[in-house]
Length: 102
Image (cartoon, rainbow, N blue to C red; front, side, top):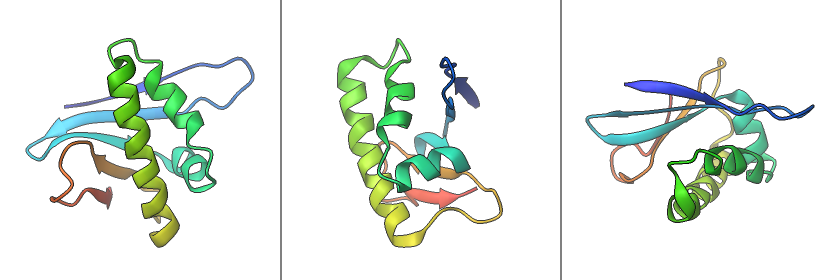
């Protein structure tokens, strides 16, 4: 199951974050715009959108910020996903294909 979270902002680009869960655990999908922000070192834009979700809370927000830093390192080493694919990142499962382009 997956769904997309849109966070409208007055005059700003609003990331559309896809989240879901499969047999390997919960994941976040980062679209090409999200990947651009993260790769440019401005992952706070994506983080603000994730942390704006009421159910996330401050503990979840801290964990997601750490995940975004890891995604930034991954993108710095490998580049963005090709062919307009999204970057799938498992939140709690670092061993099973933590990052993949889907």
